[in-house]
Length: 328
Image 1 (cartoon, rainbow, N blue to C red):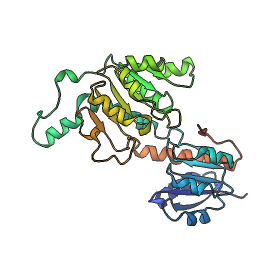
Image 2: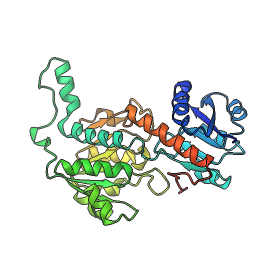
Image 3: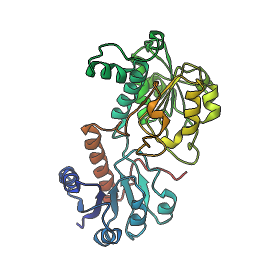
Image 4: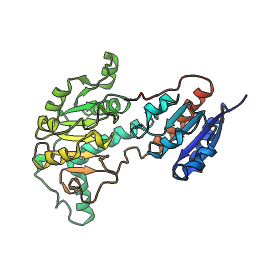
């Protein structure tokens, strides 16, 4: 039986990731791998991967030029949840489907989301710096009344998918009131398992103490949070974004914080990454920014590898791949 050709095109260390994929794939022995560093010469990558039916790769712009030149390509499989840098419509016209990581990092991002909520609310960053500098409990900005328990607070989740639902489950256990909005209609059992109640987007925005964003970036969600939404939020509300930076109109967020239209923000993503050192968000006392590292636990990588191999094996068996992302 001829094996299905799979190309791994990713960042260094490529050999480490390749070894992990081969180990997972060894059980069924359906796949034959080639590999390349995504940042090497595109023509060299295309030549090396010319027979690939599956491309396992990352969500960055150079991948489009590579994938479009692979004549046998049936599936572009990403290690990430996001696929916003990929030309899904163009690839689909060529017969190539794009699939994301199938929730491989959903637990890590859910945990990071809650960490951001707590860090903004309790000013953990300032507390840690106070201890490190020997100031012991001094230098923490704002009155004590700014720091409140999560118990009884309403958390609005926008996007109740694999990540959003995990955030909801965890916060429900913390005695929060969890509400959500999603363009997809979920059944009662799914809502109950997440511990979340559906609201309109407008009601969620105007009544929630914390709003957490968990949507893909596309033409519909680009700047879905802008001036109108910030003006509608509660004055003491906090925005959390662990999905994609451009879901939020960053200048509108800066204005809302300066004008005290909302109280704070916790961001793992920004519109421009790396963030400019002159970005005013970095010096705002009620803003916490992490460098797009919400997925940074080893289990995320393990899960992404397992899901990538599973989808490649489905192509080998002439089955439809899981986690296909439609062009929007």
